[in-house]
Length: 296
Image 1 (tube, helix red, strand yellow):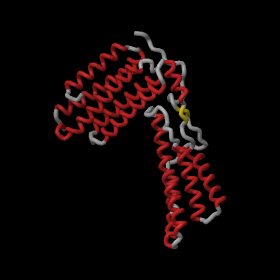
Image 2 (spheres, one colour):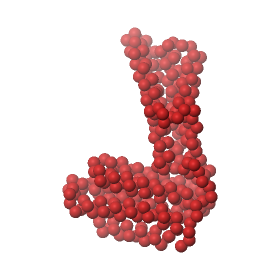
Image 3 (cartoon, rainbow, N blue to C red):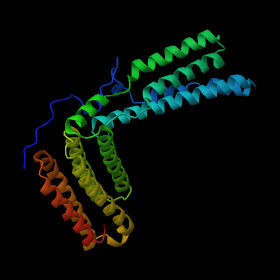
Image 4 (tube, helix red, strand yellow):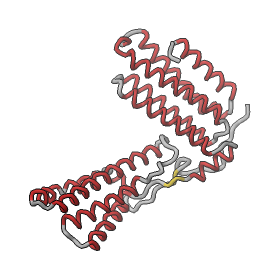
């Protein structure tokens, strides 16, 4: 076994993102509700135009309100994505910049309100649109910037391809999210707690792979085996939870999840030590245990 050393680069944030710059922090404002509230403020003018028979103004006000509401949804989605990046649940932000798209929609909505609701000139409507978009930028900040150079540097240093590394970690994170969502829907607090602990352990292993992906192929096999095993345990429990409550079989599911959690807790150290034999043994042991339980 050889001792594994950390890559030379270090980042204040996780590999793959650069912090978003903002004049005011979007954390201080409940994401999206400012824009949604603004859209609701125009309901009264909308009713006045509607009952007054002004079809063009009604359509403009309605479209503007919808655009502002959608802009609020995008701002809320942007905040969730930022939290996922900070928590290690994502490697890179999505290709569509949510905050930028939300600012554009807010600008269009404001322009429609000005033109249709207040009957302003086209110039004034465009001016209000620009001011609204700029205000969104100041209040909510910018989208996190993808820092693919850092990811590519880590991959190049490890001798693997950056797309392969990105695909591996995103696949693992998607599985974790799917497992957690399914476990939360079961209504079993002990199971949900176990899955949450496994998810945290798995994300720590993924972070280690991002920092030093030299053993990507073997680590990927480990993640696939253990995450698929966890998914199969949750799926089997979902099928049989009413029959298993309070039985020994119910306890066997919990013990199996305990085993998976324990192994995930060990694997970050295993990957650091580059203990390939130990990693292979852990994979084979779990596969055997899952077969014995009739799950895999």
